[in-house]
Length: 200
Image (cartoon, rainbow, N blue to C red; front, side, top):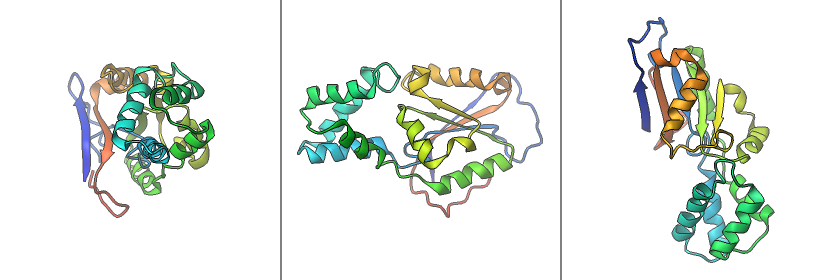
């Protein structure tokens, strides 16, 4: 089952393309879709190592991530970990913390099979994700960027998906044709497996 799919039909009459799929552009999130949600998993691991309440620590860490601008590129990683120490009392090295997060992003190769299938149907694909520079490091390890037409990372956009205008921003970056096509955004997947099939 694909959950939380944002679909938007743009202004004007949709052009006929003769494609086997009626959706022309699909945006995928990274954490929770292309890979397991590693940031959440890593933060929970850090909380356990420090004997803290996992839910309270997770909530505070996510608040700081967004409110202090780490996810939008306004704070670097070293400053973020130092801030998190000050706010929550956690102990440990930056290297230990980043390892806990990055190792929790378990890549899903079978999701790329979906992306490849879409591209075979002439559907454009992009990644739109609230991430940091860690997304680049994960790509260095797994090489998934090449399967997407565009990569939109909040860290470089200077804006997260908490600001709804980001969807208009990325549509503009894709080009004028988006104003005559359908846009779909997949940002979470529930009960899905490599054997799940979809008819487009």
